[in-house]
Amino acid sequence: MCRYDLAMEIRANCKINVGLHILDERPDGYHNIETIMYPIVDFYDTIQVEKSVDFSLVQTGIVADCEVEKNLVVKCFRLFQQHFPNITNVTIDLHKIIPFGAGLGGGSSDAVAMAKALNQLFDLQLTNEQLQELVLPLGADCPFFVKNQPALCEGVGEKMTLVEPILATKYIALIKPDVAISTKEAYAKVPNKNRPLPAWKLENINDFHNDFEDFACERFPILQQIKQDLLQQGAFYAAMSGSGSCMYGLFNSKPTIKNAYIFTL
Image (cartoon, rainbow, N blue to C red):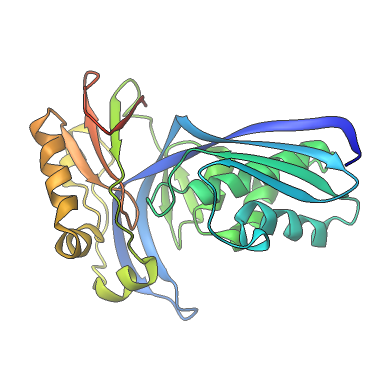
């Protein structure tokens, strides 16, 4: 395969949801929500994008069990090709560490990393606001990863207001059990609450609740057990991220927990 010399490498980190309230169903079938999204910058996939005569996707680490064209990084590339005819073929090397079906936004983050790589590689000169608008069709979490800062997210997740990084210097332990939760089913099972989130303050954090969590823990009791284990090991807050199935605990000091991903926020 013939390649050019120029390449971009970008980290695609994940996020957690601190609280997630489902408000009402929209005419388009989606739901309005309120949630705090908080980035975990040290837990990331790596994407390298290089101009090439031929198009290809090379996957290492956790490999997506789907057709190449259904991978979100490829969908992002095709979307940008439609908008910008000067974009030529590329080779994409995706090294994936963030687990699938976790509620951590790994796929959305990969797509946004791809968008940022294309923006630089082909000198598109797109602003953050333009990138947010372009990536929204790829997933409701995608606009968040453009700025990648703690934010109150509303609408379907695309309306963002930056908030204080009150969890900075805290530790997080992530545990992803071997269970899968359908986001579509979760929305169908959880009633609309139509209530606002508490004020975003550290002393209020235990008032933040994920509306998906009760349904998920009833369906998979292992999730409730993981949450209780995290609290018993010193977490000052524990919850499920997104529609699951990753559970996380927040700690004031670095914990030692078997089978957990542990990072500083």
